[in-house]
Image 1 (cartoon, one colour):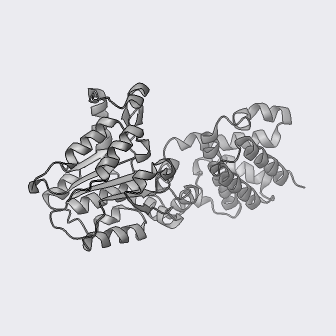
Image 2 (cartoon, rainbow, N blue to C red; image 1 turned 30 degrees about the horizontal axis):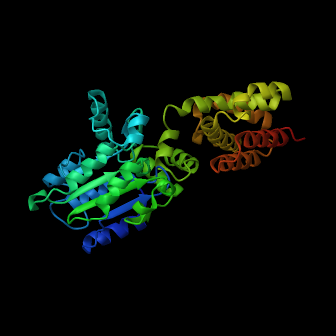
Image 3 (spheres, helix red, strand yellow; image 1 turned 45 degrees about the horizontal axis):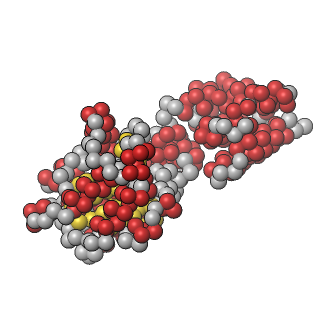
Length: 375
């Protein structure tokens, strides 16, 4: 029978630690789940809450009790989700905003919470939200201090915990310093370095590992119904993040896939002056996010070119661009396309390490021109 923990991709070590804590009655008052974006920190927090609130007890949620059914929609009364909400900078610095979100924001919160319930890897991102507001933390203090056995366990999940300003963090610290029976905090962040040390010292820190290509590919095949070949390629480009992988297969990536052929025509055929004009957005360093998407698709393009050259046309990622690929391999098929793949992969790696964008792109262009124009 499937376990509720199966909703979390990979993270075997962390799941083992948490399950052992539950079964041994050693659940910490506060955990900080940290690691790169898209590796399952939110999903882990939700599953811990599901297990702790399950009426059956044990280290797995039963999935059938009233509590578990409420958790299916993230509407359990003892589950409290905290995340950044809209607010002015003045309110942020003052720390005394007691107003409630307006109707439009409330509706958006409900919509995104419903999405989160369906997909724990969905990131709640309320428009114009800048920080975790002080009223949210004050509500935590109120809810956590409520007494009475009938209240049961109370779970507070704080997404994007680094978004707390000083007032909010100090208010939370007071709660963490006075732990109450049956009250548990699950803080989630992709930026542990931005957290106050006093908060970190009150939490058990659990670092969530970057996902392996194999773990991502398996999840894509199961959850996105992708073929093994496509899933393996997307996983390779996802840099250890499942959410990044899902973004790569979204409709938004179509534009970047179709940009590759014009980009290659530009860098291989244009004069140096014309090349600088056509690729200005990348060579002036203004489009880092777009450059990363383009580099990922350049890597896929050369992989497809190699596959096509070797007779593997049935496994093309860019099957809809086969005509362009045929023309490309007809002209450059005898060149070292594997070296082009290596150059694109290296450029992508450098960009993700925050190397200066114009330097990365100019170096790649020089390498591709040298390889493909070699005699």
